[in-house]
Image (cartoon, rainbow, N blue to C red; front, side, top):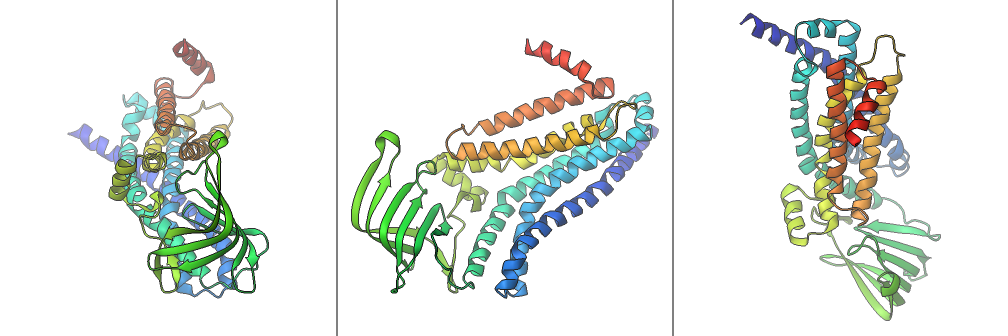
Length: 379
């Protein structure tokens, strides 16, 4: 009974030591990332005299996506800071002497990590798709307030995997010398349209781009085909609301909730839907991996140079985030298989658990010990 009471006190103390850095870092990172968006959008909002409610709607839509990035970062650095505090105060030595392992000491933080992972999974599956759709539709609402752009050769629009280029309009308001890249069926090899003129019309079920006197270029390499046309119509299914265009939740895989995305993935079985489905599991899984990385990187020999492990921790975070982003783009382009996402996470998890076991056994990281072990396993 006395031992259970002491363990309960220890767990509360560990959580208290972890919680303050977590909340502080979470607020700081969230505000920094949100401020970045504010500074990016503020000139446009001021220039077009956008009302406060519409600006707030845009910035609130950014919050879920920011939290998905901020929560794992905050969890990682809070664990890092807590372990550092325990080591610097020699509390870890006392707990080791009492027969407790590293995992037993920080097990309450691990259970909190599981709870945060479930929260992140709910965010990535349901809240973030809504926020992405809200950002797009709010951006369309803002665009509807803008004056007509001056057309020098430039990209005019990028909507639902369709990119529209034009040199401008003639006296009748018709776009001239138009090129359209339609990547809805194949992102790697989009269908190209070249036309002398293009007229954009709004229908009940979407936008219609009517091309006159042009060519269609489709396929790739040896299967490249070119077709001439006098008139050609491209339809973009969209919903309309109060004079500006808004996409529905089924317009893009990134905007779909869990059930809709799963049903579309089962029905179409495309690499893009598989990539989006698997990508949503990465932030929750990465948070748990970060627990096993944070503890080894925070422990160091007492005579070693301070600051080195902190730079190593930042490098580890950057490598994980960047590699997953690059891999996701390669998967959607058809260059890498869909399961490579899980393979990469398995590699990170294996490295994290190996490092955790090393510090749990020896008390700190040492390359002199790690390299022989890695070489032995490699053989």
